[in-house]
Amino acid sequence: MAPLPSTLPRTFSRITLRERPKGSINPSLDGKTGTFTLEHDVPMYRDEDLKDDEAIVQVDWISVDPAMRGWLNPTRSYIAPVAIGAPMRAGGVGRIVRLPKGAKGDLRVGDWVVGTLNWTQYAKVPVKELQKIQTDQTVSPTLYLGALGMPGQTAYWGLHGVAKIKPGETVVVTGAAGAVGSLACQLAKIHGCRVVAIAGGAAKCAFLREDLGIETVLDYKSATFKKDFRAVGYVDVVFENVGGEILDMILGRLNKNARVALCGAISAYNTSAPSGLQGYLNLISQRAKIEGFVVFDYADRYHIAAKEMAEHIRAGKLKVRETHIHGLDECVNALVGLFEGKNTGKMLVKIGDDGAAKL
Image 1 (cartoon, rainbow, N blue to C red):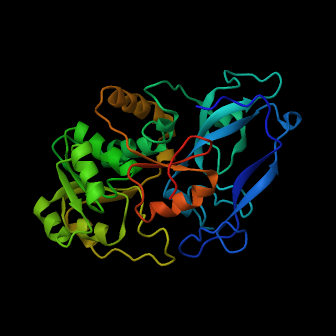
Image 2: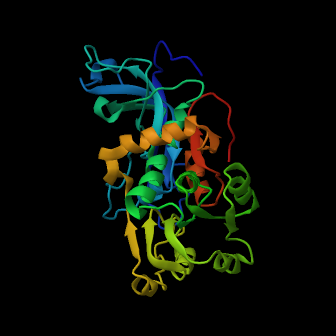
Image 3: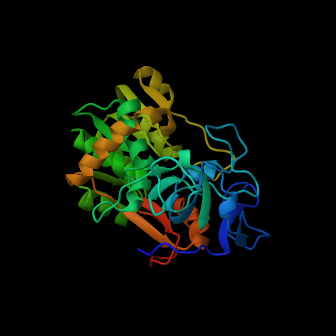
């Protein structure tokens, strides 16, 4: 871990939104054709410009999540779209490098924090929007962007808040090898459910089966996928991350009083005309429920999930897989890579000098 700088650089780099994509993101950073622009030589924030409630954070790791694609669209949603010319919104962890004179509260220079830090090397953030985190040899800062962060909260509340899973039920998780899906599989298993994990490709299926211990793993790229899924029988709970044809197929295999928790629809994020569902009539005949949710709805109960997730990690019941990419300039490729299946587990970008892969 690199030491904090005694003096801040005169400039830093960041990535801003150049135009709203119509369909897939254009990954070019040339400032002329791509969705985003890489800005160099951005003047460093000055100490005297800090308000009493602001801090400067040196960004260390950036979270890359499918929901970020939706934040680029100028549509009514649970959060305002990223403004043209603004840094791309993203969760991150980093260390405080500057606080205003006479700053109040328990934050100190050098503290690790998590918050909305964006695609940038340095961020100026209101102190109230930063959460101090504890790290050691067993708890990496990156866990606060995964199992101990929003993906963990999302998996927990999708299962316990929306679907209200019960031991012995059959729970299907789509996008099962991703950050949220892999945690949802494990949490359902810990709760005593029969888990059916759906992922794409031999490597991801092997990860779920061999590393996470999920017994029933189906490869949607397999020629026998539909036949294999029918052999599973009927299902009680669906934790849905993908949408599209797979969700339509699953709706035809619901048990009476089944619950479908709609977490995401990664298959539709890069299209301007998502396909509609055909199998929804089965919701009527099986008295089933389908409910969309946003994890922010459970903010007042985050502490409940955080405590339980931490206990599972310490006990070795919850395993975490991360895909590490290196360099601010790789943020766009990392986001695009999510939709191409290039991650297993949580996708993270290292902003700094530690070695990691490039896409």
